[in-house]
Image 1 (tube, one colour):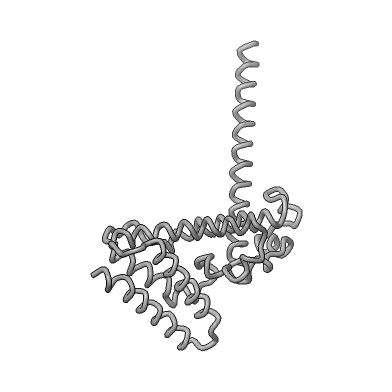
Image 2: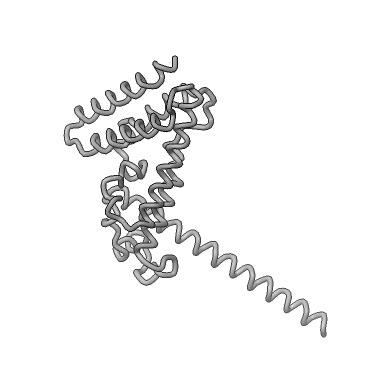
Length: 214
């Protein structure tokens, strides 16, 4: 009898643990869906474009379900920003390419491409949010700064490998130009003029870096 009770108890514990793991997995998946959708909205319309009720409706959930994942809208914005910079690895110099000059050329071409300009919902958060970050709370601004610093560090490392002088300052200048050029190209209503902005910026950046390093 004791053996039977022990077996039943073990099965109950195993089933309960399995149910709990499934619940946690489901909750994590739902949270990820919310972050993915909020990131798309935030890139396209800024932080003010995220309304809790509308966001939850977009992911097919109730308004009340939001608070099972986030304590407030402010926390959501902070977590979405972290999520966006984690996704922004695509806009860092590629580690799969070993030649520094090619890494830099690929990075410039990718960041200042028409494809990137035309896809703000999937693009780099720097260009999408730079105009409003100064007005956000300090913790949110700090997250933005950390994301910028990570991209800056990757770019500066490549510039050092190319033996370009004052790599830190040059990386800051390059990112400022790239983010500004992309933001202006997106704001420009004339597609041809926008394309010219990107092309001229790509050429100027390569001239300042790759032609000097050659």
